[in-house]
Amino acid sequence: MDLPMPWKTIAQVVGIETGAGSVVDAISAWWERWRSEWVAGRTPGYRTVAFTIAVTTLAAKMAKADGVALPIEERAFERVFDIPKGEERNFRRLYDLAAQDVAGYETYAERIAGLLADEPEMLRALLECLFHVAAADGILHPDEDTFLMVVADKFGLSRGEFLSIRAGFINDPCSPYQILGIAPDIPDADLKLRHRALVRDHHPDKLAATGVPPELRCAATRRLAAINAAYDAIRDEREQDRRRREPGE
Image (cartoon, rainbow, N blue to C red; front, side, top):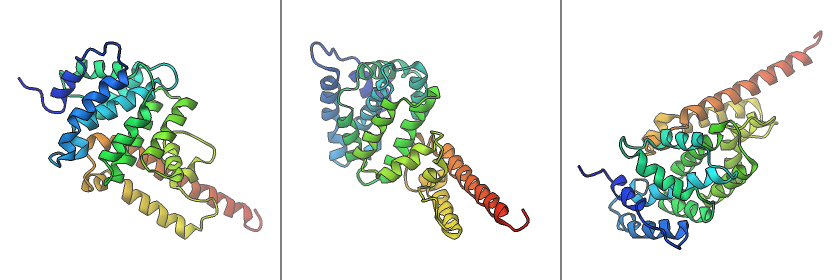
């Protein structure tokens, strides 16, 4: 039985002999060969073999950023991207090939940004998925943090967008404000409007309506919960401050 694209081609990719060439060169050669399906306009960028190879490679190299690519991170990626049943072996061969080193990861981030140039929601969703994988072991290593910061930059995301997404997965002292992407002195009315806008923009149904595929909506529920928790935390903190300032308290 023929395998569904793009995994039919992935099966060929992972069967190549890298020889004396680098892992990056080996995978890049296949990426260039199959990139034409997107350039020709026949297939959406996120449905191409090029995208699948680039994302798998980028995630594997991110897992290697702290020096050791852990199995739990690989399993987290498999859950995120829903590897077709029976294709686990092909995926793992490609993943293991890419996880040998972190060399060239910036290039893959740039290629993904090119494939999704007109779909910023997907780039943000993909960064959230990468954070989900990076935090699978309960720790975000400083080198993984730097890796993801560079990826966000290659994706064209601002520093504020990066910190807002990061704060949804990492508990920092000022994370409630970072999660919402606001300053601590924002008025209550503007805080409420900001919360409503974020809930609307990050709701899984909104992502679906904008064309973000299911595999890139994996972190949406977690992200939305973080947004609501941050909003509640700020409201509770401000209510407590008001009570402390009340006469007679």
